[in-house]
Length: 345
Image 1 (cartoon, rainbow, N blue to C red):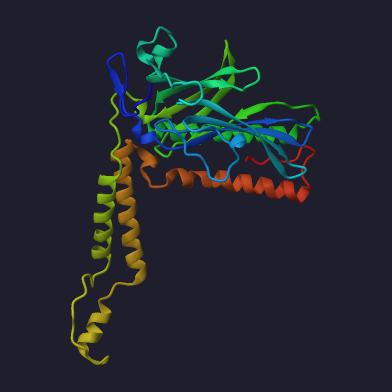
Image 2 (image 1 turned 45 degrees about the vertical axis):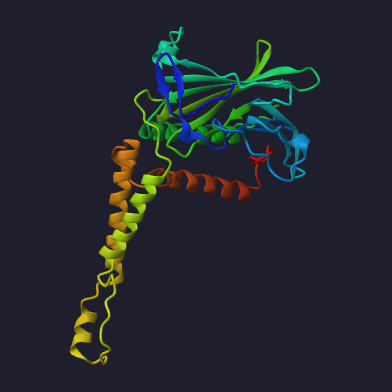
């Protein structure tokens, strides 16, 4: 049984998440301090179609054809600067050649769920199934993804708060290194490219199944949401906007044929004096871009306040990027701590 992203339906309520149909990855990291190793498990999801297999990758280091959710576990040794792929875990997909395993999607509308805590949320829970893995001591594989309603403005504030907490925890870890073993695991939050986020929750045994739990906060899980156009109207708006900028900023557009006159001719001098300076053109282009970008954010994402400004998230990230860069510079100059730094793969 397949899964149609454009018509996710339960209890007479439909959701269209087809705009989210592209590969997206979240990662779980586990430190092995004081050993200079860590385990990174990258979970790649394409909720709407099968993942494409990468070329040149050995069979044992990639999930089989038909996989929609794949987990790649890597052992990273920062001392030897080496990475080893330990296993590729097929968590959910269609496998007609591997025991005929089906996705068998199960959809639960949260507002009408039997759980009281679920009824306080807006969105739906999606359960997808996979094959038994590994061959030795096989366990059923399953993914449970909770799609929660969230607008862009809300997600921006939430990400900013979480970023502050992560930076604060990182600073405490550096200041309070007591040399004891640390096997703590952390999960990543990834932006989905549509104003939402995907968060890793857990990956472990639940009953007789190994379950990957994710939380996907997106506007497409709102019950009044409409599916996003695939880009035709957007590209049309940008085409018109581009020509508008050219015609508005350049007073000589379109160019008209004119007789060749001596440089000292009065008409030539008068025309040259009426050309606006380059800074004026840049100002008009910037203003038009900001106005159009704000209009687009307002209509597409229902943004308000600072979120109306194009690339506002990037602008707000600048202090965090600078702070993180300064911390790295200081750590480099001081020779680093005993734990060393780990880089995500």
